[in-house]
Amino acid sequence: MVTILMNYSKKLIELRNKYNLTQQDIANILNIDRVTYNHYENEYDTIPLKHLNTLSNYYHLSIDYLLGLSNNKENNIKTKDIDNHIFGQRLKEFRKKNKLTQEKLAQILNTVHPVICNYEKGKYLITTSFLYTICKKYHISADYLLGKID
Image (cartoon, rainbow, N blue to C red; front, side, top):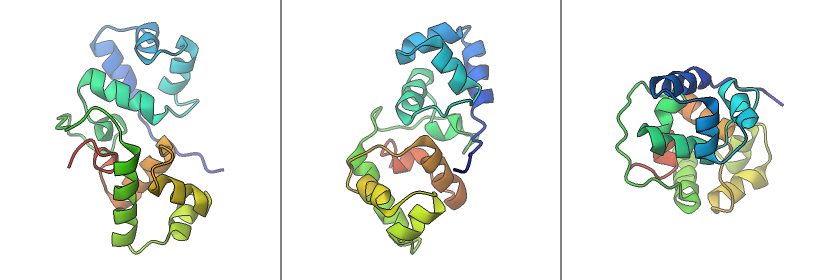
């Protein structure tokens, strides 16, 4: 398995400090244990998209900004929720536009074809590391793919 360094920890720490919050405060917002949040903040574990989305909404910042995909702090979201079906449609459109088969995208992400198929059907929310890899490699917005912006 390939480890992806997303470098979001610096932003999470800066934001927490800017708002004078403790790790326990953020853990409470996310409804998780403080140690779990500490692992996300230090990138020992990858923060799940549902938690990134909660923080994006809490801080009024884009997921692109939190992941370091953009320096733009503006959050022009149309919805606070992530819709798996919209994501699936946009992933499929992105894949076809870039002339990628499901097999090829799976290979790029070091996963298997059925995973991509299930993402496109809206059955599962994509992992943070897979989303980051796609957005970084193809210069596409995570917020767009997730249906948070048009």
